[in-house]
Amino acid sequence: MQKNTRLKGKVWKAGNDIDTDLIIAARYLNTSDPKHLAEHCLEDVFPTLQEEIQAGDILVAGKNFGCGSSREHAPIAIKHAGFSCVIAESFARIFYRNAINIGLPIIVAPQLAKAVKPGWELEVDPVSGLICDLINAKEYQGEPFPPFILEILTSGGLVPYVKKKVKQHG
Amino acid sequence: MGMTVTEKILAAHAGLDKVSPGQLINAKLDIVLANDITGPLAIKEFEKIGVKKVFDKDKVVLIPDHFAPAKDIPSAQQCLDIKNFSRQQELSNYYEVGRTGIEHCFLPEQGLVVPGDVVIGADSHTCTYGALGAFSTGVGSTDLAVGMAMGEIWFRVPETIKVVLSGKPKNPWVSGKDYILAIIGKIGVDGAQYKTLEICGSAINDLSIEGRLTMANMAIEAGAKNGIIAADEKTEEYVKLRAKRPWKVYKSDPDAHYEQIIEIDVTDLEPQVAFPHLPSNTRAVSQAGNVPIDQVVIGSCTNGRFEDLWQAAEIMKGKKVHPQVRTIVIPGTQEIYLQAVQEGLVKTFIEAGAVVSTPTCGPCLGGYMGILAKGERAIATTNRNFVGRMGHPESEVYLSNPVVAAASAILGRIASPEEVM
Ligand code: SF4
Image (cartoon, rainbow over all chains, first blue to last red; front, top):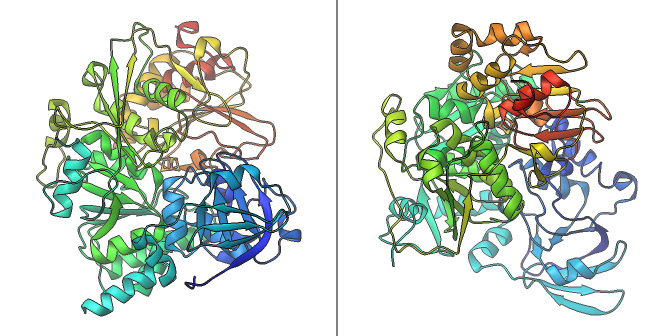
């Protein structure tokens, strides 16, 4: 993710407590190939996702998104399915870390997550957490990241971030 | 102001005298764990970092357990990936099928985790080891890769919720599983999100180490970062027989700060059943109503220990599984399996009409060895009953302790142990 990224896309709306088994079922975890994972992303939540998703679309969910297993396959599936970011009322802890670590922008924005309807167009600044509802021309402020986490995100994820540190310190 | 047990362990591993909730720290790691699903992805990320060797070949543990013995060709490849990496890195803690079992049953049993440790595992139920007074939490594969490379990882110091369980249950069939289901039922699946669940009280002092492992195992089902039960004499007795390293016991200070204190009197608690599709959807077994079942699973990192199998066998001894029901018993490790053979439990299960599998996660995550068809219903001693967790998205999983599962196997519907004893 670049520092001045603006994400724009159509909303897919999911409910509360979407667990990682729903995001990517264990029956598909006999590989970690992102393409294979993306093909089964959220298939029991959005049966038409594969046909209808457009690159850049935005996933909005309720409370506790990504609860359950630690499988990093979940944010990988979401990222490679074409979603540009995930906005939720709240995230489960391991999912939150995993998304940042693989460079998938996520934003905690309870007000927007409650208000938004499927199909709305949003424009998102993942760095400041500012979200614009383009249909109703209304702005929402999501929670901004602490600087340290922002640095991981703008480095492209945890591995590029650590790689940089390893190089600096030899 | 004093510190909680979790804060003390984190401070010690971050080289600090004091830490407080919200603080970002780098903590040194004592054990870094992955399995055949999360390991291959962690290895891929590890290789991108640019270090040649893991930080300590004795502290990285890789266990093939989820789809092992391999259920299909891609799973076999994943198992091979972690085996090859272990060889190449000369890891002392890679265990082939036949010498191990489900990771969270195996590590405590073998003394690989000790009180006072900081442990990360690329598996959400890594929180299990909190039962031994360790700080232990689940992470994803990328965090794990960084842990393997650097031997440390960043944490945000969590706020702590203290849960005090008092009283002695009148119902003899109540166990650690029921305590933790009752807690999750009370606070919800995000009730402890990002936080520590510190569990204590007289009911915990009375509880076996097995029961405590069951409880800490399901801290994640309340969204917690870690669950922790401070080590006591029981813990030290358990650890003494197994530990491969010295350990250190930490306890919360009397003036430690808690975000919240929850008190539960277990005197009148009944065995609990979590209905589909959330572990928080709990009811007392007497309120379950008539729920016919197709399958029973007794096993998993939650309730696949010897005590669990022993209790289930007590219920099933001399009885027959209901003709419409499949019952699958899965000992958590090879050691448990052997003990179950030696003490006649396996005979009891087979005579009752159950199958007994070698250790694996198998059906717990809908992998294999007991997948549910559309519309089928299972009662399981596992930890999650999410939509599709054990098979078809239109199947159902009910969670319970081993004795309720065993009684249900006999009656073909969700049943309490009194009904068959
Ligand atoms: S037994 Fe189930 S919950 Fe435990 S590690 Fe295996 S899949 Fe995960």
